[in-house]
Length: 487
Image (tube, rainbow, N blue to C red):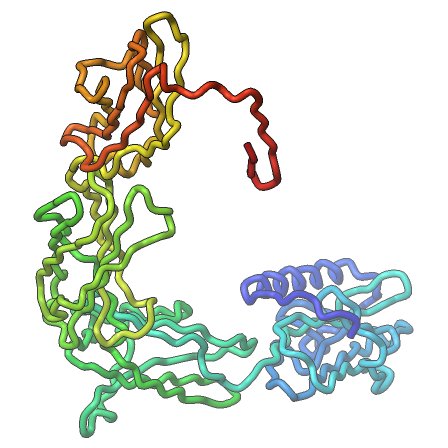
């Protein structure tokens, strides 16, 4: 055939047949064939009841074939049409909207043309026979043709129990253009249990939905206590039957609900004691329930989660307590999440949805003092008896602020003696002092917040004006690639 057109769904096919048959009646209600057929011959040449046509197809109606079998359709003209000068050479076949190539057509005799395809591809399509008078092709009759297979095993058969409260099994029937019915039953372990089979509850076994569901309210109840189920999937159509057997490890496919009542009991700058509960009835689950706890700080990248050691937790406990230690950032937000999984499950796809909690660690003093160097100062506006001094430092990262109201504080020593001098201007990178004497100064810088001062400090020494070095006569900066400079 010239083309393999798109497949036609069953519902669309029915409407096409109706439309085509109505078209046949309309075409021949005012046919130019004079006295087309007599009343006695009507029954033999009706493509559908009550519709007189110039011929019929044999076999009539739907044709259902197993893949590998030939397709054979005969189109036979009414004798009265033959008497008007038409014969089988005027007959053509169509596969949906595509005309069938001549090599698939044989003229059997004056009234009959034969369509023969040795091994048609799997399909569910319409075939039409038409009468060609040289200018117009008039419909003769049609057939729905389905080419399919004997029953095949279903695909993607899987079952899952949600929180040990129910069991839901789903599957995907393989593509088959021949109608095939599938039936699922199960039996439980034990002597003689194979004879005691249970099927899908009538109220959930909806044809075409391809699933079965059991819980404590369905007609056939969910059997919680059994670790294994034995499933039999029966497939049947006009070409045969098949049985697919599956031993299902029930407890390995129980998906817990997310943990309940997740909260914190105690917080420190570097730890959090949390608590949560296992949702009923999973606290009685025979294999037990595994836990997974992860955390992420506001300073971490969004895809980085730290996994907590939970080896101390009892998989049979209903309520869990866990002290998460080693948190690096005081006074910071942390997102926590708790997952649960059947102790019999394998793989990461059986973890529950996470229970989540956001906490803020307690504050403490800043984590570091700012860094300085031997030349981290600048003297400007030198007068007869005074000068202005800028003291510089490298500010610490924000995650080391460790508390609210973060700032830098500078203590001043003049000739080794503490002085109660306040900077005229303080920023995150420098402090400016004006009107200082020409004596030597030592500036001690600490980080501070609401909780206190950093444990360490940095110092910058500014020599007296008499001991200061003269400025260099020339200063050159050479820039290289990759942000490298030479002074």
